[in-house]
Image 1: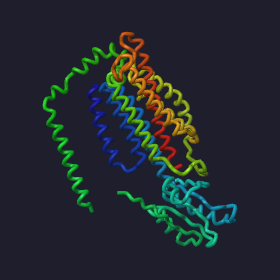
Image 2 (image 1 turned 120 degrees about the horizontal axis):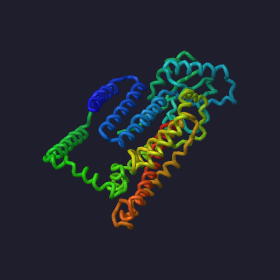
Image 3 (image 1 turned 90 degrees about the vertical axis):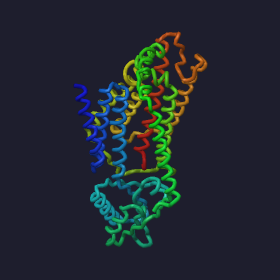
Image 4 (image 1 turned 135 degrees about the vertical axis):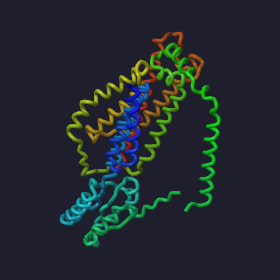
Length: 181
Length: 236
């Protein structure tokens, strides 16, 4: 009886491993990784290794999937740093237009818009170290907003095409070429 | 396009690995010498008397092979330090003010987490303390405690934990672990084993197992908490 259960679980383990490799949806893969950990733990118990099974349950099916969930939800964020000095200039109407564009853009790509303000530091360092996707700056001489982001980012190219017809927005890129060898 | 010098490096690496595999296979000629029950018989016969542990796995990793366990703890410390180093930022992030962070956890999940949190914490401590009687031990119990504290983040996302302090405590725990493992040289004349002589009886020896399991449990749980705190705080 126990041998049959073990055999069935081993076959299931191979099937789940193949599903993890070939599936496309990230969050579904995490559920499968969790199931993989549980089945592996059951197999350890069947093969009389309860110590290893406890460790496998705690790490393989709880901590590792949760770390994956955190990392993937981080990647779905669109982090915007707002550096416009609202006390100095009176631009309520333009700002609402800018945020309309950004919200629509984030909704279209199913990203979560995360707006922050008040972080000090140079633009180059911020985009490199803090994962900030976009920095908004107001240029009072030319009366327009400047969007700044990494030149390697795909988001910046799409933002450029979207904001082509808006005269009060200009998209520029920051070079971030890292030299790896 | 691969440069010729890099191509030579790769080919020589493949040949090196192939050679290692070849020598590995031809060195195993007599399988009866490798797969026998001598070790199992030895531990079943002497394990309880030598170490005072009913769980023979604990007997091995806290007494017979304590040297291996110490370096396992060291590897975890190195991994945690590596994660900290990668996720470290130079810019002071204290003035970061995220206005639109509406990461709302479902109400049902929060309620169940509140019910589950004390039970999980208690179970983790039970597994740590009873490591020498029942299945489990320092590493397993520490992982369960870390999972319980991970649930705490889902109850309240604003919770802050000082990661550098945790890492410092973990380093000192590792040092303490090494010291306790080293005491046996003065009391019994052997490196890395139980510092209480076996002449004092099994009840006294169990004290050492409690102490080491609790130390390893604390170290592992702090290390795992530091790792996922680094993941949570990454980029904020």
